[in-house]
Image 1 (cartoon, rainbow, N blue to C red):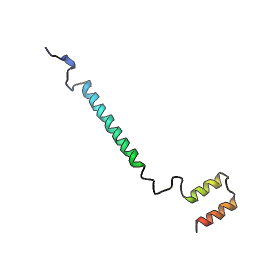
Image 2 (tube, helix red, strand yellow):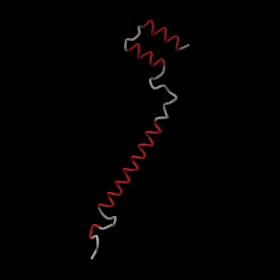
Image 3 (cartoon, rainbow, N blue to C red):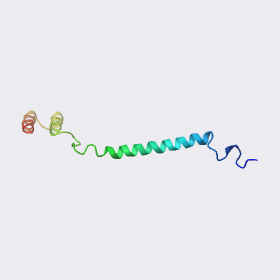
Image 4 (cartoon, one colour):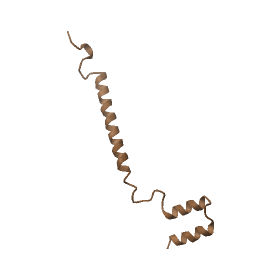
Amino acid sequence: MHMFGDYGMGFGGVGMIMMVLFWAVIIVVIIFLIKMLAGKDHGRDQPESGSALDILKKRYANGEIDAAEYERIRKELLK
């Protein structure tokens, strides 16, 4: 007579599938965390909101500055 019956300590059937799924989830979480932490350092050299000319274009498009001021600042930036 078996002490644990058909649901013993073996790795057959459902137990094997659950173990593989468990480790797959752990590996995916670790990879996700590594990518998330590594991604934070990539953009440090570039400003988050774009270049000064891009910001100027956005301000002009939003109506914050008029055409004369846009041209004056653009000429200054392109020097």
